Length: 258
Ligand SMILES: Nc1ncnc2c1ncn2[C@@H]1O[C@H](COP(=O)(O)OP(=O)(O)OP(=O)(O)O)[C@@H](O)[C@H]1O
Image (cartoon, rainbow, N blue to C red; front, side):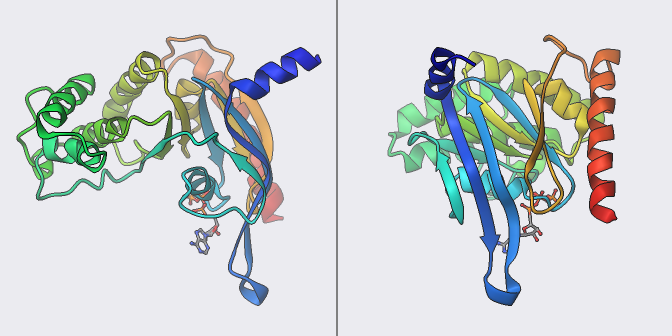
């Protein structure tokens, strides 16, 4: 890589981890969750993180989110704002759908009229127009995740961190939400770091699929997704690359078990 290209990559970086380690506890109880992870995510990129259970994927997201401190290395997000979305929508049951979406806006000090307008726009974006007055329990799981997505977007963050956001949904609902998320990611020019256990989901959504080793997590491979968009999760191309990545993941899990 020439110096110029190298500089370009650097300036374009939105999330940059260099040799990041994370240790929980100390002494005899110390647990190394991440071991010198280096990863760069560029502006507008959609990066999926895959790895065996317990390899530190959620830990990595919480470090990027600033919810926890790194133990070593460098982590730089250039002061950008992040928002997080989890497998459970974690909506406030006593608030309406619109009230849940308005909450981050309220915390940003945005006035009532503007909040209502923005929440309505966000509900439109996630295709929940007309549901603002409902309570979370009146919605399906997929609709609740749409509300969670609208609430995450309300934070007006540059980086969206998603921790298995569709893991609890049925396959059909999940496929629809993949399409929606891809559309929103493009329209809003978001940078997304997306954790999943589902290899096909990673290939369906990602520009790159980053594979972490078993604990302590290290980056063992970074696969550019070869198939152009739009993609279908059940296409032979997605299945083919998913099979290749699954083989690599299996080999890693087996190596760790030995
Ligand atoms: N707050 C904490 N204190 C101590 N250990 C922790 C803490 N959070 C996570 N761990 C440990 O760190 C390791 C990595 O956990 P993490 O949740 O990041 O993995 P993961 O890859 O997201 O797992 P999964 O795929 O099962 O969700 C695990 O061994 C876990 O028990």
